[in-house]
Length: 325
Ligand SMILES: NC(=O)c1ccc[n+]([C@@H]2O[C@H](COP(=O)([O-])OP(=O)(O)OC[C@H]3O[C@@H](n4cnc5c(N)ncnc54)[C@H](O)[C@@H]3O)[C@@H](O)[C@H]2O)c1
Image 1 (cartoon, rainbow, N blue to C red):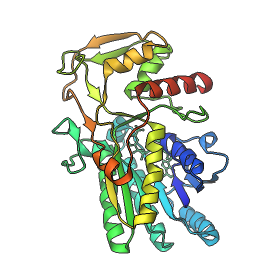
Image 2: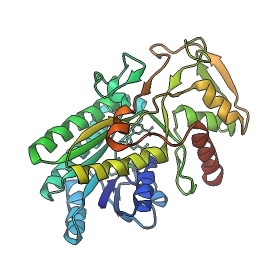
Image 3: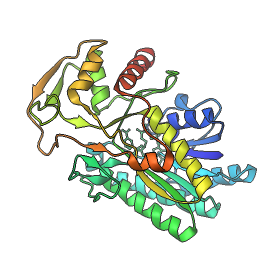
């Protein structure tokens, strides 16, 4: 396949590029490097500096590449994704995340590209009503970030229906870890997710961290959340792209762990390497005891389930961080 990866210099996109190249595909990366890093782009991928909210930039790249050989699939990772920032900058979030997708789809239709893989989020579910999120659950995002991803999903569905295209939409929660090569990984400062926060605390980059509540009805009293290793997630994108090319059918699936890990399990795993300075705080309002995503549909349609576990996520993230940060 010839695959265009938009946002391929970012955390998840760069891992998808690695997995695509390992699987023998031709990859073209388009990224504006707003949060991504050129050094994360695999040396065998072709790189274009470009912004998908600027139609002329995207059109020029598609004209050039499709004249050589049309893309079989376009993958989209090019979103802004920090929830508090989205509350502060709703206009910027809608512009980048939704207008960017609209322009991408327009350029795809103008070049007769039929398949799109879209990186969505479990944030589209909002505050889930049950512990195991399924694709049929109600969507009700509670912040502009989640809203922009849901709006993008809907836009993709309508455009695919009109232009006889196929989509593969993936929804996932927390992503962690680094490629086993340790060449790429998570390299950002303002990290808010539990695993990088715990590791930064262990490395002394944060003074301490707070565990919000230890009296939940879970195996150790702390909350259970869903974590997937970034390489598992990246490989799912390869499977999704192949599914579209081979089946000419659309799909929307969660990429979940089914089980999840508690906050204390994450801390214990990091403490196998270094102590973590943490305190127990009060519960945060609205925090459910457990939220994880079901992977039954991903298993059935793509034969996908996570191969790596929490210790792989912590080990690769720690090793990457020690080497690169
Ligand atoms: N990281 C997570 O835990 C998580 C969880 C659920 C869903 N997602 C989704 O996965 C995708 C990738 O997330 P990530 O963690 O790799 O983020 P990231 O910030 O590392 O990657 C995004 C990439 O897109 C590029 N980009 C942004 N806007 C662009 C534009 N207008 N034109 C061209 N390039 C642009 C950035 O420079 C960056 O390289 C996002 O769509 C996000 O919504 C991420």
